[in-house]
Amino acid sequence: MPRIAKIIECVPNFSEGRNLEKIEKIVQPFRGREGVKLLDYQRDEDHNRCVVTVVGEPEPLKTAVLEAMEAAIAAIDMRTHEGQHPRMGAVDVVPFIPVKGVAMPEAVELSRQVAQAAAQRLKLPIFLYEESATAEHRRNLADVRKGQFEGMAEKIRQPGWKPDFGPDEIHPSAGVTAMGARMPLVAYNVNLGTANLEIASDIARKIRHLSGGLRYCKAIGIDLKDRGIVQVSINMTDYTRTALYRVFELIRIEARRWGVPVVGSEIVGLVPMGALIDTAAYYLQLENFKAEQVLESRIYE
Amino acid sequence: MPRIAKIIECVPNFSEGRNLEKIEKIVQPFRGREGVKLLDYQRDEDHNRCVVTVVGEPEPLKTAVLEAMEAAIAAIDMRTHEGQHPRMGAVDVVPFIPVKGVAMPEAVELSRQVAQAAAQRLKLPIFLYEESATAEHRRNLADVRKGQFEGMAEKIRQPGWKPDFGPDEIHPSAGVTAMGARMPLVAYNVNLGTANLEIASDIARKIRHLSGGLRYCKAIGIDLKDRGIVQVSINMTDYTRTALYRVFELIRIEARRWGVPVVGSEIVGLVPMGALIDTAAYYLQLENFKAEQVLESRIYE
Image (cartoon, rainbow over all chains, first blue to last red):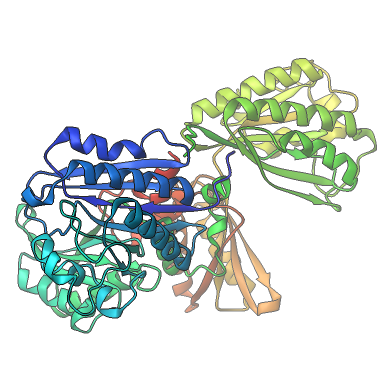
């Protein structure tokens, strides 16, 4: 069996969602490369944006990301870019996510290395964000991106907005890029047996960090009109510190006040195995369980 | 990333637990071989037995198992073998367990191929057991092994005990071997907040298949004297049909009758990821969850 010691996930967002030929050129560096696996890429015409999901060992992943960035900058001109999604560069944002055998500091270091190399090679100003941020006000992507491409030439001259790497002015056609390490996001929704949106919104307010809830939990209430029910729609920003089951049980407790049942929940997209192990271990009251006891993890370790 | 389509686990039991040199010779074919990974091997001096856990792709695994069997037969003479564990051959039993990308019929077919090749090459009579069994009375290992090495020369001449492959008489020094495909076993224990062994034994009786309980569940009560509590000690013989959480909840329900709390549970050794996913999905009431949504499974698919 092959031994794979370290795996990092990367989810670069490129500002091209319409021209398939250009998208293929951008994605090409992730294909057929030893030590790198393209898991998915999804383009959105309205957003005019393409989101790539790729995993790999650190070194080959670095090379592939740099090549994809180069292809994107050659293909995309932000001066004529239109789309509904906020954006500030041809390579809008590049998060690195530790998956296996990699701790956060190493993912941060990787993001810095790629940022430095990309800035130099592509003459691109780069902001480090999330866990890689060099100042607290530059941690949140929305704050970094505020002003978007059109406002960036002005913004990076302001105090506190000097790029971490690259020139002190925007790339004329490619703008700027945010790059950094972050935990995997888990998109998790809990469905309630009521059509009353107010209840979902009330519970969302109570469980989310913003308004007094759990630290790594974002949530809103959503109306699932087709099914005649409502949903608490959640983004878990660090499942290792705010566990899935804790959010689920908290919602159940709050729903009880309304006499409303939890009728189901769903995980949208990918979820790290650790989040499910943690959940099973909680409910089964498992003592001393280790992730290495999972047969599949032993096979690939 | 390497693509591994099919993985089978094999847990051969060899009748040598004392002579380290001999054990090394038997284990050697599983080392450093492309497509095969030795996960563990444990010897027991009292049992005079060594249990190997290995995973691999079907073809290289077959070759390695055959070589290990050959080494074991060269090294072990059952005529002088003593040990507490019941045994009937130098290579006592060889189960094949489907792990990934392999359905049970394919694991059965693999066990038949290995049995045929081993019988021919090593002049060894082989009984197919468990899912590979050719008659219902030969399915259970304990039934096949009854009489042990000393009684086998006589037993295989009895009606219904002609070996599936190989000669109609025992191998003089290696006896006979059982080979077959089975589901992974999960060793799962539930701890009760009482020192009363009778309660654990009563609950074990109620949940196990033998005395009216769940189909793929074996259980006994055990005294954990060190901790001053008792335990329901369980062997789950098919977690895909008798789920872990169902056993756990059933024990909780039965413990309630005694006013005894469940204070914890433990998984001993390895557990397939599917058993934990199933548990998490039950408690979170997950809708439409697929194993492919687990990030790690996507990486290696």
